[in-house]
Image (cartoon, rainbow over all chains, first blue to last red; front, side, top):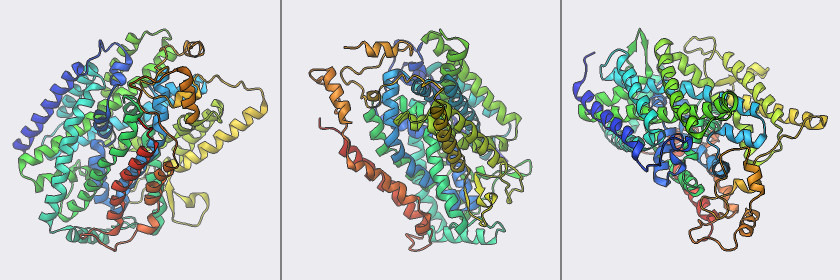
Length: 545
Length: 84
């Protein structure tokens, strides 16, 4: 395939622009120094409504989403549209829960979800479990962002692995330099480009293809001809429960990902978060329109690019843009996807670094680490995380990352009881939560392993849907594996909590937080952040006038 | 929520001039469940007709819930925002 120079030049222009922005970001809304994790890892905890909107939107709607969702719709039809109900559900849920997390984190100086679990449930083992789960779920997600850039580069005719490596080295450099301020600033460019491209695409492409009637007729024809039973423009009856449980479970998981929580905690106030939950659905509209591009690709007769003889469905959206748009605008569209990979990759690596620094390094390696040392460790870890992601993609089959990300969604859900129930009450004991987490993880992993995929012919890790026939029911109905695993988790959590309390031997572990911590708003009198050192905090709180 | 406010009032005899409005509890919070229920029932919307500009009902129904969910969130936001 020839290199497309006009597209590549436009892509290169935007890529250079965001590189400059990434480095300049260190001086944007400047703090006295970046030698504190609140500055490097949370952007000073001071992003207002607009910045948060771009940051969280840029964080949740990744390049992989923009490439993979239409690819799924292209491949299986209606089932791929689950991303739309999923992102509709997530914001009302977060609206209820996130302000509480923000308040308690603001007051107690928590940087990560595991910090909160440590303070609330009084167990560093449980906090370690939450931190490790978060890191394990985030790593493959970072690697998948490379798949998004890779799909774009392939379409422009750029072969080989070095462009990917260069892109990630640059990203690693400015993330190291500027912390969370870099993706926050770049998100403005990314989202502006995405909105322009999607609006143009959903108006221009259907007109060129003869309208939506023709587009869906072409999709019907394709699915009717395919031998797979699970595809179609509408859901088959046994898929309905799988569709809604996948949407619901994914929505629960999304908020628990460390990078989402990083975005939330970087906001200036509760009010900022609450307003954002009203405004963020705008991105879901974009996602829904993008999903329809999968059908447009069918109608336009796009066939995915093959690598090593295997067709890569993730190339269909770039190919559709390449075919439909003039070269210069295709370049803009590719830049939108490519930069769309950089923003979440940066935030995810920062979130993973924060978890490592706060909940592993400071907790188990060097207890007396100073704030400056925490920031230094986190910056170094962010480099390691990105190098790891590149290595995973280059050395291993990309399919492996996709499997890991599938697992990631199921395992991150297992942190829900400790975080979400914890935000409302201490009804669950840390030991119960730990037992529920362990059993939920095991059950989830086993069910994923036990899922074959008839279409691809794989015996294991065939998808996120577990057949109820495995439990002896005579039915074809499937349910999202994560929902089943979290059900097991919750049962074990409550049973073990009951047993621990009934035995009377287990201590009630200390709770560092107070009820009013969950409601404080920034700037309210007498409720500013407490001192950093967690050990001091309760004493100081008690001694306040 | 009200107990929080009273705690707060105890700590400061007069509220600071730049204090952001406290939040209020409101029955309107239940409205947040409406969009969630609206899209979690594929049984009722998994049909082709009525079509809108050639798009099957399945797709435009779900897309319609995007602005609706924002609308309900705004109602809840306004109902729970304290008077400033």
